[in-house]
Length: 155
Length: 281
Image (cartoon, rainbow over all chains, first blue to last red):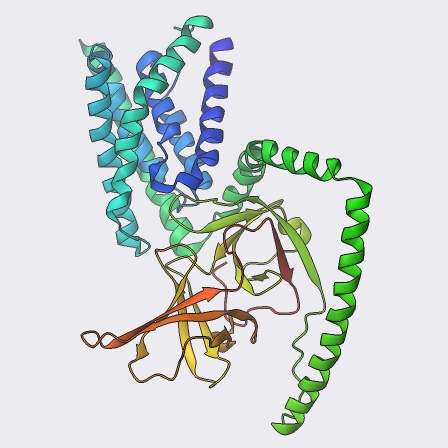
């Protein structure tokens, strides 16, 4: 029960971080997705794919994008991470950061593609700063959440 | 082995189902605007409290500053404001007589009411409510009767319009957003132009202005009211730069808005004007 609270609270905290770092624009890390990827890697049993989808829907509301776009890409990326968490867990932190750079770049491209189909896209190359900054922020998120997980003994 | 296979196909079917669900919500939201209430429920229950929470330190500081200013300061401020109020009233009288004269000269039969009757002051709760659009969140929502397309102004000029409303908060797109365009008019010549936002923060540009267009630096631009989105005659800004590049077909004109758009803490909502066009509701 307590693990559920800690995961939920940390995800809410990631939303707070996202909203407070909006002024950075494209230079703000993708906090919610980083937190989510960490929890999938650490405790894959506590999060289901449906939860990931719901969080994606929440992100849509927070960012003000068309309802469902982020839900779609979150469940796709979430599925990939679910299927390969065993492998990703044993990578070093640097390798994980590189992998996250690739995953989030794919995500940005997918969102851009969907937006383009709806005619609401405003493409700039700056969109790809977010994955780079996010992968730089990954060690920070990783160690912060690992401390949290060990303190509350979440498996 | 068979159990493992079953579990992994179950996951896969969940994924397929979720993707299908996402596409459905995208289509419903984008094409038919059917599920905006889901958005406003999530907004009120989760995003609005978080917005408030994340702005708590700043508003707390503001309160502290206001508390600490002593009574003498406040009294002095009051005197200054009273003086200002009197001079503004005198200006208003002159303006009213000018308006009447204008109406008479142009033989307009029905007097257009420039002055708004009802205004509401809204507080900005989040100055950048979107990562890639210039949108701010305000603390007035459906509960206060806000409607989509409502014009939002500052003390000096136009700021934006409401694009999204929840029960307790709503979102205002600023006129400096690159995808936002205002039908406007040059006050001096009466020429109709299109003013839109620019990637560079804090400036507006004129789109598709011919090389020979009669606009000079210092011209004041205001809304024209064409297309029915904005009330007419709201001041927008002043022309600061005009460049005629021979290689391009159009001249580049920069406008500096009267308001410090994006850095304001209070906005004014006007009520006496409803957009005539069908809003995307």
